[in-house]
Image 1 (spheres, helix red, strand yellow):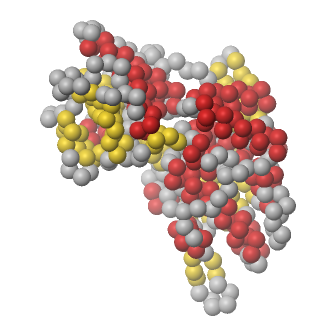
Image 2 (cartoon, one colour; image 1 turned 90 degrees about the vertical axis):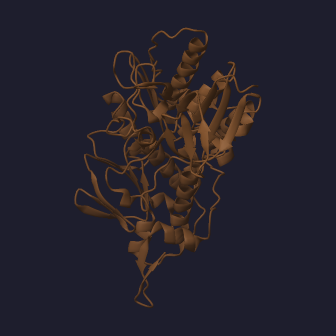
Image 3 (cartoon, helix red, strand yellow; image 1 turned 90 degrees about the horizontal axis):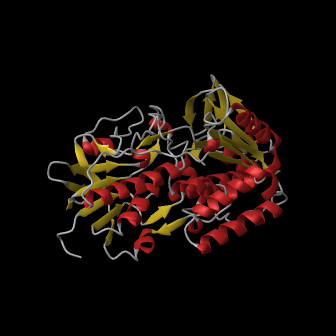
Length: 440
């Protein structure tokens, strides 16, 4: 490969960046793929790692392995600090400057706390492997602490699990945590009954799954109620602390809070000094290029992508993958001398959300499914998008085992000792013997 071929820099190896790289690598170009982590993550199943259903290795793959067959792709483990548009260089945190002919930014999204970033230590979100394993640790440690807690009020707080946000992630988390408590952990403790755990799902809006049809939302509510989940609708959270949340002005004691209420784009708009929407997503042209800079493309959750009819494209994996493929095809046309206008047209294949191990909802306009049929469709769709036969088989077998037995095997408490994990959670209790306040 010579230096005369176009050099493309891709920032982010998520769904959009990886899809673009694998398609564009077949062209006469040189590609540098940059990510601050060494793995590609299948985010739609991240909540299953957090709730002990799957192991981390089943939903994440080394980036170098995924692109090793493309000799014209170089992979860098690095953090991007900015972009010099005039010089056409990407600036790394260590001071390195990488030149480009074409730049593709696909850096995804992060948690959004609606102006309350101080809530993050108490209400972690779910975007990375580290997030998932930290939440898993908090869930399992809560039961372990409750087993040896003698104060009834503190034990109740330990056995109360609050999920904030009634979208697909919140619904999926609530259903799985309820099954973990009532089925998987049954008979494993002596001082407590895990089935008595409270799982509380809080949604500020009037219904769950706001992007689905109303009958799908109603079904999700009924399915969660059958699992014993306490759903609070139209109830905004006004405070999050180490000892609980405040909902509608009333305190709810808990030591485990999970944030599933909102996301914001990565800081790419700041790197590019570009116009962004309220969620921080870069406003792009119809071909997903940056206005005034046809050599820069922004895709996936980082961009305010629109469909051909002007409606916004959803921030989901299929949209990012379609955008990556579209930009690769656009680049191919440019290399062939076709500089005509291109318009990204997202094709929506439907909305899916699962509620526990036997129920789900699927909404594709005229086609709607709910119950077990939707659950099997959800499972098949997710297995299809996993990378590699080995991982598809492993996940399928794990799900079948859970489906028939209710047992989840990924229940290791990792990443630090109990005292350290508790200290980071910020949970505070009264020490009855010394009369002082200490971190659990």
